[in-house]
Image (cartoon, rainbow, N blue to C red; front, side, top):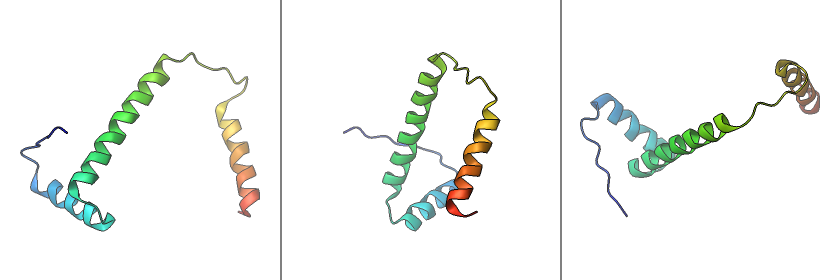
Length: 78
């Protein structure tokens, strides 16, 4: 395993990181490692997405989303 050291973290941010870890019952290391992992995965996903060809649905996406939301609301009684 490799080590990574981050220096000059602003005190307010460090307090927030420690508090977030404590709230989740996790270590600062685990919280930061998860956050960095998610960021890298998101970047890789966006890179793959940018290489894909656009898809023509034949209608506005907003209309499809509205229909799905209405259907979901009916199913959950909203």
